[in-house]
Image (cartoon, rainbow, N blue to C red; front, top):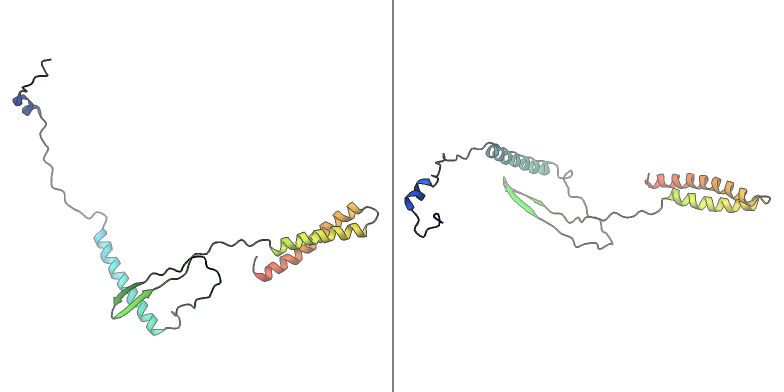
Length: 163
């Protein structure tokens, strides 16, 4: 009860309060070398841009823009971004209207189709040829037909560049 008085003693409170510690001034030292890196980057980017424009002027056929292929699908609207900058009187611009394409499902390969068709046809042919035991004839014909169908289909896939 003695600690809770309506008239606090200000002399005691002032003498027990912690005093602020004096801090040394903070100096901004570039420990990571950011300023030096920025200077290096600006010099190299300017040199690269100058070299590029010189190379384009000297050999325009090598740096010609690729021709756009027309496409029949409408996946997304074309988006373009343009950036320009003046260096030594020349301008550089970059435009892009390419949109990302979703991966197409390629379906069955010709080797898989050939295996299935060959196995089915071989099984039927084997069952018809072997009249004494149609099951054995069908199994043997299916295996041989599948192998031949796979070989033909795999050859066709290689011609198409799938494998």
